[in-house]
Amino acid sequence: MRAVVAVIGKDTVGILAKVSTICADFNANVMDVTQTIMQDLFAMTMLVDITNCTEQYSVLAEKLKKCGEEMGLQIHVMHEDIFNSMHRI
Amino acid sequence: MLNSNDILETIKMIQEENLDIRTITMGISLLDCIDSDIDKSCTKVYDKMMRLACNHVKTGEEIEARYGIPIINKRLSVTPIAMLAAAAKGSPVKFAKTLEKVANETGVNYVGGYSALVHKGFSAGDLELINSIPEALAETTKVCSSVNIGSTRAGINMDAVALMGKIIREAAEKTADNFCFGAAKIVVFCNAVEDNPFMAGAFHGVGEPDCVINVGVSGPGVVRSAVSKMPDASINEIADVIKKTAFKITRMGQLVGNEASKILGVPFGIVDLSLAPTPAVGDSVAHILEEIGLEKCGAYGTTATLALLNDAVKKGGVMASSRVGGLSGAFIPVSEDAGMIDAVNCGALCLEKLEAMTAVCSVGLDMFVVPGDTSADVLSAIIADEAAIGMVNSKTTAVRVIPAIGKKEGEVLEFGGLFGSGPVMSINKFSPAKFISRGGHIPAPLQSLKN
Image (cartoon, rainbow over all chains, first blue to last red; front, side, top):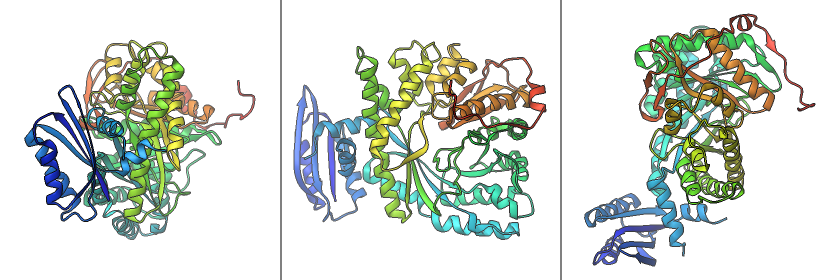
């Protein structure tokens, strides 16, 4: 199963490092990363393979969300199928 | 790799524009629970519903977590209870209490199907059930009731129309200390559909499989936001952008329905292509019409813009789903839509315009409040008018009217939550009593000579 991690908020040092460290801690493989910075707004989307994740999907999602809150960012973790079904015919 | 703009668009829809799955409703047939002993029948109903629905809420929550999409309601609908009451002797309220028990134990919000289909006449069980509706709704909180009193092929059963006016009044009186909420749980239909996932009118039709999952989507905020980005567009362009948005919303419903069906091992029925408003800011159908170019919902042009919206939602949604059904279209419940409430309060929207809107919207006169002294005859006549619109136009129409016992025009009935608050609307003061007292049947309309 692959999940999309979307990070939105004010740009600060070490966002990518922190998010990818959490993924590594849970044995979730980061497959692709795209990030853009529009003025001060940081938007990053990350495709993560969680097939061999050491914890339940919901635990990882909760951990990332909490990390986001600490850094003043919004972090959403969602199954990739929702984007495929909404934006592809 | 997915396009990051698409990802951000979806997140914005959910976070800022209130995109959600309004309901996943499991339809359960109770035909095999019929028994001449009402207690035995209730036990069979309880056992079957608990067996099929025990994981319904948990599955909904799992899907919510996995996809990050809010699923607001998890509900159940059952075979019209009048069919069970036909065989069993005793008060049908026992069935209502059984449904309530199932709702409490499974954790669903509502169970629909305390219903009777009487468009051509009353059969065994129908009158007993209809007469028990006020008591059943006063003694339960999660049971919803509906009665089909007309159809394009059968005409309108005026005896049932006359009876329903009294039943609605009685239901409101019995729950007068609880915002007359009994009346908010009764829908009177013309051309009722068998696979509707929305309350209060959901029931599981006899033509349906044993158990089925139906999904209702919602997203007025998303449509409004898409329209607001096109201030100078022509009407064709507006229709196109609504279609595209409806497509995306419906795809999400299709995904959730498929997933729920897989996890629960129950066939996937339909996606109801709906725009269902809530009282939350930015979740209003009236505001879409205003965004298209009306100063207030209810102004001249409201019926035309609503027709455009309703049709575009269906066109976009049909391609996004393998099976569509239910009520499909834009809902216009007054108390559940911040824009509609506002329009009534400022005098832009009256009952007559609302009725005209129902000729082109998905269902009918929904969640509107009339003065507490409104007589049963007047309620019946409102139902008859609305049913006539449905009958002649071959569409589903319905009436869910709340007589606000003890309140007058200009006051407000506060329901709270998803049901919102209903301003008491002004009604025509002239009497239809003679017409309603005649009884009988309005014959089915011609299907040719359509002028």
